[in-house]
Length: 54
Image (tube, rainbow, N blue to C red):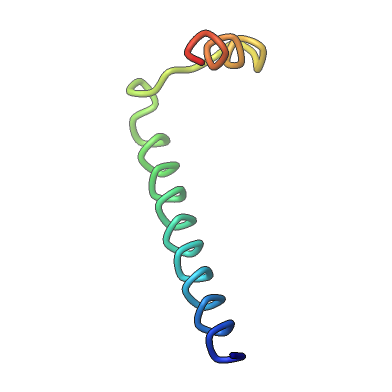
């Protein structure tokens, strides 16, 4: 059983690593093309949009 737990942990770590890399790649893209992404004046403004779409 310990082997199964190790495999799950490794799979989880690899998935998290891929997600982290994708997020960092997206950040770099946002830095290169900031006009392509919506900006908010405040966190409240961003939350208002989230709740309006919910």
